Image 1 (cartoon, one colour):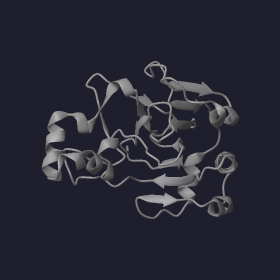
Image 2 (cartoon, rainbow, N blue to C red):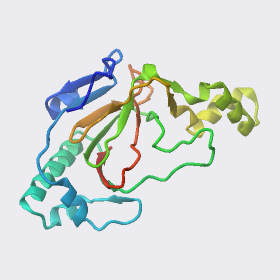
Image 3 (cartoon, rainbow, N blue to C red):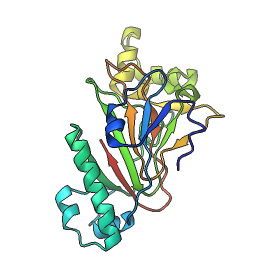
Length: 231
């Protein structure tokens, strides 16, 4: 089970895929969760896949060809059902085995990698779907407990030094380099783990969005691989 006592009513839980995709975001609700307790051995999927690099994409054909135990087959059936349901919805899900993501140390005062709380942005209406089946799950942060990093005076001053252009182009510079997507948690912030097996739909920053985008981040790895579906 996930602990939603920290969610400040921004999370709405549902009990089916149809409700997950059909329930509208509204007010401060910018995260919808299909809460599930899954069966099967998802670690076996990771062990049977040939891993390459930091992130390995498991293609559906490869997944179907794996020789698995009964528990591994149960896990595979769930993965295939999720892949097919998301594709039927019009999404483009990717199943990844993640060792770690690349770190961004280009600008130490404002890293822009996925370990930083950030929002997703799109020029067209869309949502972010994700589910962690094995390993450390992602986290979200209540919007009221995060501050856009480009508004923090000391960070903004560093960005202006980096920019060195006309004032009217500064905001465009922040957007072009994705600096404005990242947030800093307040000292007393309480993050929310997305848990294992739950399929989430998160609000994205796009022109037609009626709600604030959801602040989220990848977890710091604890030495084990993650099995993640995302789109």
